[in-house]
Image (cartoon, rainbow, N blue to C red; front, side, top):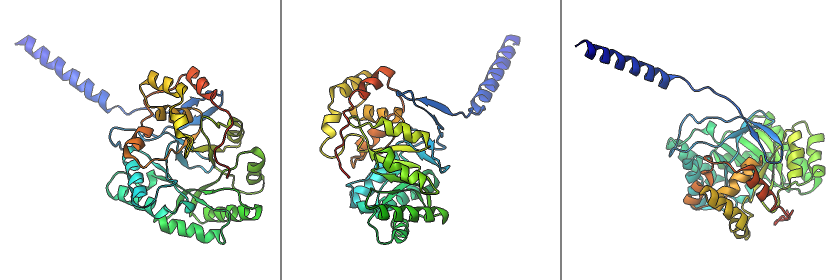
Length: 328
């Protein structure tokens, strides 16, 4: 009888200790990501308050505007109509929180529809989603274009708005000034530029305006890495975002079937696409691969459970030949 009582007391003590351990809150911390180039960037890893399909949300970075931006998102260039809406919805369901669109794409309404569907279905909240759109430099009234983008998206603010490409000097300046006005009016949170590839062309927006670009979105992939711009921009507090991470239209095969990429993919039990996405993230880039295939969308996001080694990063860096495919 005494022995039985002792056993019961020990079991009770064990269960109490177990429950206390389970209830102990996790310590929050910020991880320093060491990049292959020797370039260090402080990256705050925001833990998701909710988890969908047992997947984590993307790591985030803090922009010079003070707002956080996910490092991995969905690009929607060439996606239209129901295909676009379903792709964005699938992305949000898979854990994406960064969605990239543009007025020129003609799909802002579909992107907005997908976002509101996802919010209605309890997949995410508006404040968890980071929406990027872009304005063309030949606009007759960029202020009205911003209002129209808000209307098409069905949003009260845009997280990031970019000057889509260089037009004329006066056209570029008119759009950039309109974006600054929109920041002051609370319509836009962060601004930036796209398709500017040199220190000289970017410097104008740093020297001549009161709000610096937070992001430069450029063509960027294994064949065109442009590390010099990345490192220079980082010193100014500006991040580089990669579109065409797999090479873009007509060039994905030479990236996804590259033997170096495939060798590394086999070593990790991952796809070639996942290796390339992981290379972008470990190189300090924001990446927005595009797809309309729900399986590919989910696969491209499933990159948080492994890391490329220093040697593997060097092998991938060696693929750079300074070749851009577009000439915007």
